[in-house]
Length: 531
Image (cartoon, rainbow, N blue to C red; front, side, top):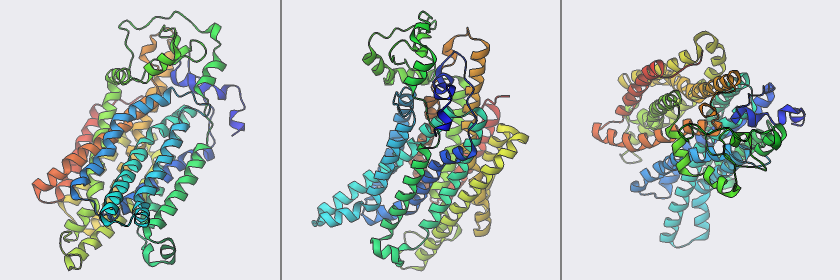
């Protein structure tokens, strides 16, 4: 780490490359090992996601959660994330911690993930050991488990924005593309390993008997993997603090003092009033604001009003990219959340509502197990496709990758829904991996290209209005990431109604196919691609 931060330019370039209109400083190329270290956080996060997918339903059933509370468990986290994601993105853009702008948020959210897992995997056992009254035990077990699930989902969904912003802050454009591919690669590996460990019957093994149950075994592995991956990630690439970047590059006496506000006095998308450090910073100076009250200015930087004003004025190409991301995640989640149930009911013909010792229920359970292996295929193929994306992008470009991901997923899910068969379904699970890799890489590659294009425009036209640029990357990434939470809200609130109306879970797969094919048209016609 010391070697990466020894040069004079590398300790201060992040702030200017991000927000300054003074011309972007060329960032140094990062070694492949550093980019892999940076990507390990995605391995740990997806490993824990896979463990949750395998165990959260059995945990909720085992504590006796009423069916009336299921929707609240699944909807509360994405609603909170959708509302708070841009706020935290803005806060990270203006964080003046000496450790950097993004890493304090990543560390906090990682600890929240760890706490959430501890609560939902161990809450029932802890309550049973502490409370003897059956009624109180039931109430506390349900409450702690629900809090754990919501906390984990909230933090795991939330953390993607700061991770991407961290990558964008410290890497050159070429390394951003390379880093995003490594992110998708390790996302697939982490999910595959999580699904494989979740498929093991730990209750009948010695480790399960020693630790008490399979839930405690999975918590041990999850906590170990998550902790190691976060330590590696946080030590991967040094960040320049916002305060240091402004202080080292432009001394207070040389900062321009009288540049005017924009004609309408408003702030563009991603721009929040900047915080004074020890003088008028370049970001503050270009808006002509002399910060007489630092505390007041800090509060103004974090107000929801200024944030909503910024989001409402986002450029059209950012807005269209967010819509395409929403369409893609709506299609993907519609299929993934109900896939194992689809395998058990439609492909295998089982019945989840029959007696647990009946043949129909055992057939359904077998279908669910095979569905888990299908999800493992999805994760493995996502990693493989992420590796080959680097070669494909030179031939078909980001537009071709984006379109192909949506198209293959739409055709694959459509074929699965119309012709349900065990073998063809397992093969077509590979199309899920293509979509997963596409959603994790292409939109963020486009964000990086938009930023690079704007930085070049500011270099070529230094007298141009700074309001056309100067967005915080944290807000940009957060606006894109919160589309995932909005998709979860739409899926959680709408698919249950569709299934009840149609009387079959097959409508979920057909809906996912239709939405993905609509997304094909959208990414081809409306999303802007940089030449």
